[in-house]
Image 1 (cartoon, one colour):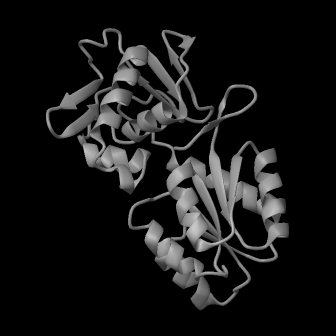
Image 2 (cartoon, rainbow, N blue to C red):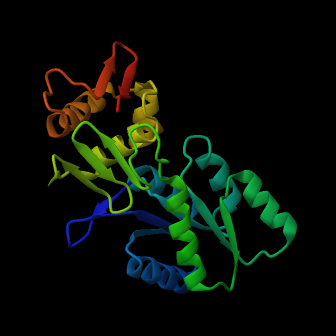
Length: 240
């Protein structure tokens, strides 16, 4: 996930609004910010794709009627490399339009005019669906434990031996990606694409550096890691 630091020091989820109507962007942005989101904006498909790659949002609010291209084109391009939740906002109210958007990869669809409260509720629901389920390594809904580390996936806090651990947004995103796939071998390309985007799928040095940071902060003995395991020439896996 692409969290940013709030003034209180907690990590906030990131939303990207792709909408060409300034008044709608303003209303949606203010509502999401009041609900605890960090918000970025784009007005066109092109800007949206660039912002998606650089901001790495946790949620995308998408208008279909954009000035440069149809929002469906954005969805099709996005789904080639990302599973980030997308809520469509559209004036198109025909069943065929809704089906086309959902088939192209949208997770939800709201027709304009819409209720801001309903939109923020659906935004929260999109993030609950993304949380890894409690299972091996999970001690309760919304938490994940390994060794002496406890990750609260709802408050986005990390503790080791009961003490808070500060992770940078990229470190946290890498950790969450591995938590979502416990014990599974994740290739270098898998991790690089999920955390940095497809343009970085060959930058293995990024992974080496950030895995080392996670080991330093979360392993008892970083030189002999028990949880962040290297699979030679292939990738890494998280062992709870």
